[in-house]
Length: 305
Image 1 (tube, one colour):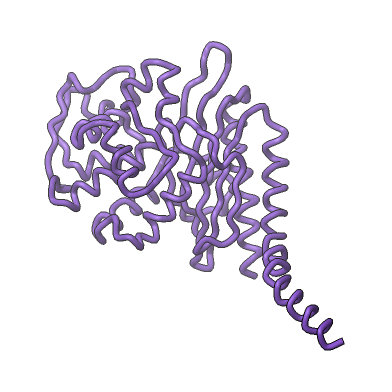
Image 2 (tube, helix red, strand yellow):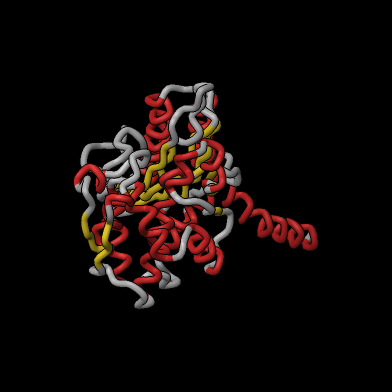
């Protein structure tokens, strides 16, 4: 009998972590089912990655699938630029001349709209246009400054980030439908980069660069109907969007939004949503992202009560 009791005790000790893991996973499973219901009713491929405060409640849908980034890659470009600034190669106050020849007509650019004959801006100003307003010309100027798209990919690869490809600039990406797929990431990779650079445990950014980039991300003006679309008014969201056009077959290749959503209790969660191969209208694609963000918000709000 004594031996049987020892066996039972050992079995109980062995099973406790498994039972605990299952119990803690159940609420996240409920959230996953809600997300899957949102996605299943749409004629689109959707990728999602979610991670709570300090890595809690992590889940994904198509988490390892390659999705075209479109302007989401401007976040990655900004991080690579800030890394070079931290090395002393450039400075935020350094001035960059923008000639009229740089203001390409096919590229979306608030810089071009404000300065149709060209201007001179600081790197800080160009970064703000590029992140907060998704300026394509600003994006390409920054890429040229640091050595081109491959320099961005090399920066992340050197720091052990995977599942990320940056091969072309905004000009090339907008000139040919098929080329946009050369710049891709996975939802899980996007979330990992958000998390790593927000917690900044490896000190990949200086304190000044850290404060600068997250201020810009919180000031992003694009995608108001995406992650922020159904959240309570005043919710702070630090995010970067990406969008493609619609091809002649009525297919949208990218409606994206990645970011950090801050909860009223001071905590937050990371969320990356990519929509591709979509036959839905633009408003529906954005609603997919908004619906996913809202059920995730509700989930984390309930968890802290």
